[in-house]
Length: 457
Image 1: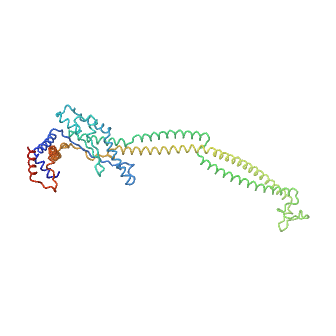
Image 2 (image 1 turned 45 degrees about the horizontal axis):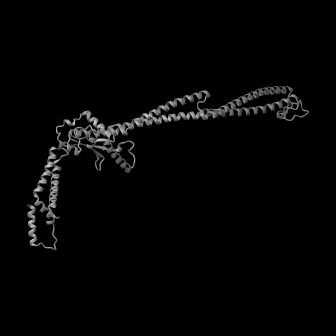
Image 3 (image 1 turned 90 degrees about the vertical axis):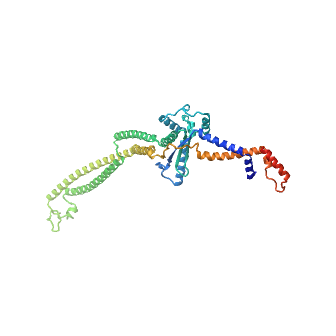
């Protein structure tokens, strides 16, 4: 069927077409008149995951994926039961909801249209109705989340939109904040402080018992003392050897003086056998000295021998003392070497406890700072950039939409009814296009005119 035949059918059934068109528009006018006005309040929330301390590093690709997942998570969270329940509780606390029976419009048409549109009635205690009236979506090419809520009351629509947005921000702060982290680190810090006190007490007891306070320092002092003892011992042995040599020489001289003859050549030189009591020669030979000189030399030598024996006795006593002191120092060094392992282990445990205390104290401070950062609404990843205002006009029904819709539906249904009427009357066989190879005869044309007239009658 071409356009010309459609126009002919509409013209023949113009009354039916006009009636259908008027009926459709009348139904839409009735819908506009009796349907409850649905208002929509919307709130815009800025969702930026980059405001977190841990999420400020990374390449742009990973940051983009993280931001996309973050926004989608927040949109899904806005539709969760916890957020909606908290918002409903806040709204009911601030402005109790009226019962449905108190509404002024209780007609059957109004309730039927309201149920078909799934709009929120005056009673919003049911979370499913609130969730059905809620829309949370991401604004294209932005980091904004749009929270829209529809209600028959414009003030309540704006109130619900704002409360849901506030509940979403508070829920996000609670989820991303971690107040127990600082408490955990503080507990670990106190545990290591108690362990440090216990380890210090054990080390103090061990040090007092064995007089061990600093292995390295004590070893250094003992080694320095040992070196000094060895030096003194070497000097004593050297002096002892020197005095022993002198004593042997004096004993030889003394034995020569006893005989009063044949004195040592080192003192008197070579003495001739026939020159025992001769006068001193001009060349300094003492072989002719008087006997009294020999006695004096003998006395002096004897006195020196006595002094040297006393000195040797003192040097030997010093040697024995140095040897005993050296053995004592070596024994102390051996004991320190034996105790060094346990002492170092106790010391390392104390140092480890101190390191752990500093680490957990630092972690606790970082956790408190991070928790303060996340729990602060001004620094949160979610910021309400536009609160919902009371809408001035309804989103349904809207004349700007119903008028074109009425015209379009009127045309479609009118054309459909007229075509159905023509199909039932078999007019499509009569007014259909004829083949070009068979020209229309006058007699047949006359019969066609009669058929059209009979169809119109």
